[in-house]
Length: 226
Image (cartoon, rainbow, N blue to C red; front, top):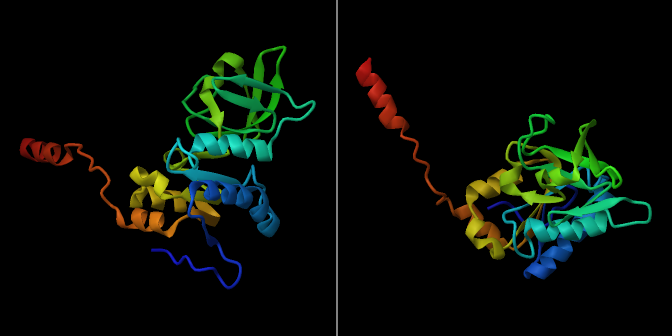
């Protein structure tokens, strides 16, 4: 178990207790939009990434994306947006590429920021590390909001700050390897929001499905041929 006691001073790991899912949602929103930017100076869109074990539920990526979009990039006069495939795409939104698109040279897991929504041209322009990529409205199914994403989607990536909701609501996904992956995505700061019980379950459960690749059998066959 990690040390979850409140630190004496400033540190790079914090635990924010919240017994009920609704309370966890409220505290997570406060941590991302107010407490981290005010105390540490990180940008809540560019630097902070919420990683969650699941897509559904109060603390799932779908609900958290909607709530974080409302807080961090609300609609405003003159700010263009378009609604497609169950999502609102608005100038300033953080988005995630969900599949490899070799023609655009963008790949599954790439993060970008919407810079323009051209309603008359039916186009959205997204910046990926300063490189502009154009999407027709019909291609927006390749992009999803990325204020919050699943821990699975985060594998191989790093972020300045990671905020992880961890609650027994995610019971089926509370696994040591998944928890480890989420925590190790944060380079400078990690904040857990939820319950000690959920963390204990994740830390102590290492019964992830075993993978069967047949490697031992193949090596034996090669050795026999040699």
